[in-house]
Amino acid sequence: MEEKQIIQAAIQNFNQHTGLAIQELHQPAKRLPKNRHPDTSVEIKAQGKTYTFWVEVKNELRQLHLSHLVQQLAQDKEHWLLISQYISKNNRKLLKEEGINYLDASGNCNIRNGALLLFINDQQVAPQRQSNTGKLWKPAGLRLIFSLLLKPELINEPYRFIAQQSKLGLGTIGTLLKELEKEKYFSRYNQNYNFENREALLNRWTETYFAILRPKLMQGKFRFASPKDRDNWKNVQLDQVFWGGEPAGALLTKFLHPENFTVYSDMPKTEVMKQLHIVPSPDGEVELLKTFWNTENTETKFPQTVPPLLAYAELNASMDSRNREIANRIKKLYNV
Image (cartoon, rainbow, N blue to C red; front, side, top):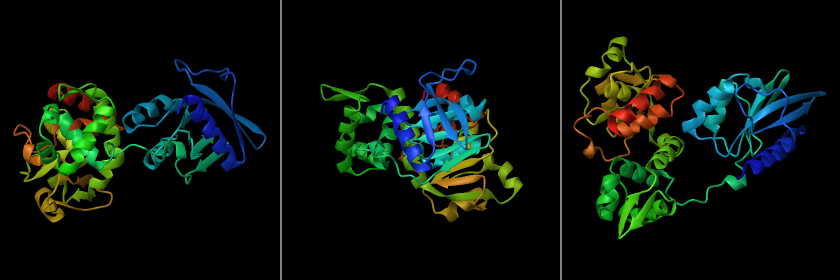
């Protein structure tokens, strides 16, 4: 959707759901934020008062850019309103926790300014946002893309080999490759594919991985059985278990002391618990996920971590600026 359409849809649904009047101002509010350029401004009339907001408009709020956006809007946040075509439930929750005002095209919102408090969280996704894509940005496609990001030369191998390396069924490969070509991430010349925009593909894969595939891989949360076990995490000899996230960043760069621990494995939970000395805990610092790549291809240089590309993606999508700094180190060190 175009920016104007997003604003109009959001305003229409907001007015309908709240019974209040929100309207776009033809001229921006007089008092402009320092070094900021709002996309527009709006005012809300409620209980005899008028509340004015500078507006940041986003077509779709992507996980990768969310932390940067929160930082931008944090200053004088009562007077900012983020309007987006679509904001996922997880991102709405995060924005609410950070005190960032938002409104999506379906009318979901959390707006606080002085005595004004508005919260709507149950509206269905706007019809215009419903996906009409095929399988490329669903779990199977995300597995294939990850394999190709790891080894771009894989795309010119026989379908059977690609399927094996991506842990996919043979019948899905041809369809997925056609979608990749259609979306301009690869071009085809003389029967061979070539990367066209790897950086854009990596960014979109990271965003979609967190929204679509990663939740399906989650096996539960745990805590270390004792402080000693937590302190000794680096010395554990792992068997078919791989550190991700912060511990992977620590092992790959030597510049991070992890506070939260991510681990991937296809081993039974009981076996992982035994290896790491962890116990189930809903609020624990350890999260266990299933692997989704062909672990037989794990590089001998990093036998205890996920591929650097996955560690980069997890850390770069973090709200923690320290983690994003480590992600950049990984990108440079390992040519992610």
